[in-house]
Length: 479
Image (cartoon, rainbow, N blue to C red):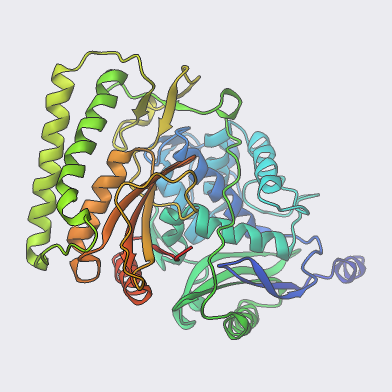
């Protein structure tokens, strides 16, 4: 009987609906009441591991040794054993898709060394993204004293997951996933399969929390996030979330200026030294590597010049010819890299970029203090859709008044990587990108790969076609 007054006082039901494109709140009920988040917690666990990988603390291929603490977590779990070694990518899939508690704890320990240290990082990150009423005590979300959040804070977190690390967001829509030791099924597959446009994000359940869910759906130009705390069952929770998503789509304008949430400052292990350098023993000397990147980048730029002129239209490439062309271009680039690496000196006086190979063993990717004049570069060819800063125009925007739209297909840590993905994407999607202008924009966080000089309809169609091939893409308006 003692639990009843507590439940009433806690106001266990809470909800929020947000236009994901702008952050505008469309509906709120008890949205600032501190409640048990349950496994919604794992959104933050995954957000931090994405950040850690991007900043070189570890890689998705890092082998994680499962601790006794992680192996002992109660269900839902992957079934990890103490001492077992498993790649980080499988732990991430298990946490995102199955909501495995043992996987979440293993992730936290891999990133920060202990669950307590990871919880402190979770709280630092929560404050940095504006989660003002959230306190984390663990990586999995099982009920613990003081482990509380709100519908508003979890909606904010869901929006950051979508837009800060879109290269990983597809994890949350997978109905099944290979978690290394076995295939796991999504805890939210019923809503994913029944609600048009639903593509994530995270479920949560404990007795104290009830049935929680942060869901997102996209229809045309509109994306809505709906959060429910305290559902009475899976079915009633899903029905309520569907109702809230419907409300969101009714209230959201079709056309609105996209306002990115803004990625928070990096607060990981290398933050104190101003950044992390990922060392890789298979890489050439820094000076050689930097020169290689510059030369390869120039080679790609030369291949782009004929099409980059305003008003020019490149000939369409038949779909069957795309793969051989891409392969040949990549081979040419690698040849340039090898030639320069064999003749360049092992050091360079100018600031250089040190890049870690995505395929390198995790043991060779250890955080070290950044030498002066060295900046971080990630080898992951994926996108982060936040507005570019201090833009540097590489190719001229079309002067055609109707062609003031564009698309972004990724943010990268080197100009070479951005130019390479632009070339590959252009060849693979000639139907909509034929005649567009390739543009690399350098900002504080990397190099954005953009196609500019498109009409709005063409930009939207291009993104839809790319997303259908699991390529993340977002539109860039005239502003």
